[in-house]
Image (cartoon, rainbow, N blue to C red; front, side, top):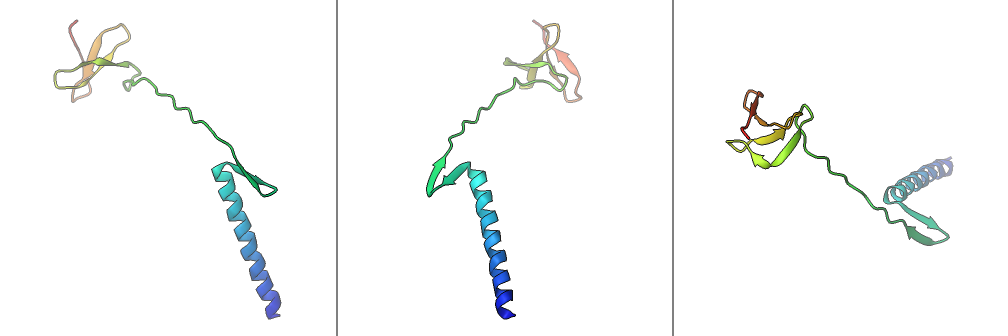
Amino acid sequence: MKTIKNLSVLFMALMFAVAVSAQGTAATGSKASTGTKTTTNTTTTTTTKAATAPNGDKVDASKKGPKGETVYTGPKGGSYYLNSDGKKIYLKK
């Protein structure tokens, strides 16, 4: 009876080791076959979005507000920054 219990514990440990090993292989993107380990190189492409205001207006990086605020370009082409109350303050051209 003790032998059967020990075998079942050994079997469970073996199954756990196989499951963890399979997760590690899947996470690294490598494949193992017939004793040969092959890795697949993957390229990650990151796209940068243009910075926008909460309402979707684009940031004008070439300009700053009077106290260094971020300047945005409105839908009709005007430049503005947001004051401490969140109101738009338009800049003169």
